[in-house]
Image (tube, rainbow, N blue to C red; front, side, top):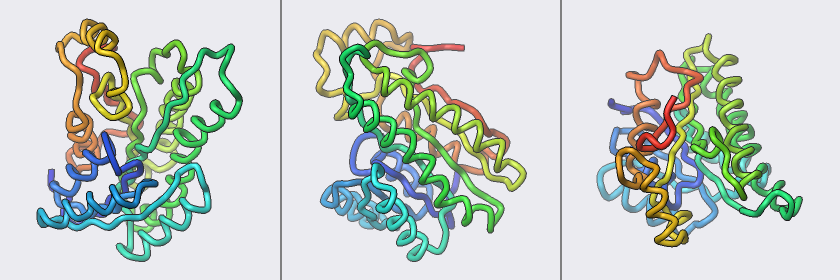
Length: 247
């Protein structure tokens, strides 16, 4: 699944799933633009990719800020000349029961997890249409498919990403641009590291494969959807959840 000659941009790339995606895409031969808020972590990631023979550059960006999105994509397009692959991974959680959830926490999660993906897609469509090739991959969640108590904002944002994926897939298919989503289940990241051991053990009981997933499990799915081997797949949600949700 060679991505030689391709340019990828990954949001939320400073840690967790986003970082694993950047490393995996670089390993497959793509030049990678890594974007996130943490400049120090981005610089460390760029050094790691470049030291291993890859090519990467950092573009600090808060996806909750439309002006920062536009500036970062303009800079990335200016440096690389194109963006072939977009991975919308950036996301946050602000958990609370719906009856107690503050409007600010609803807005923050929807803006960061869903609206930012739409804005990022807008920034790359021109480049992809020009070359009649592109891969847009949105990182959704199992909880956007089955819901989760205390996560009305997060589940809504991730369900919205699935709808966005399908709409964009239909809009751009005639130009050989695919748009797919990857829906991780329980993945060992900084976001889940704060969970209690009891919660993790209970989660594993619900996973037929009997283990928590890794960021690399998700990154491998992303690399596949970014490749030529996935050229006849669009509007699809690829579950990476160990069997926690089937069908």
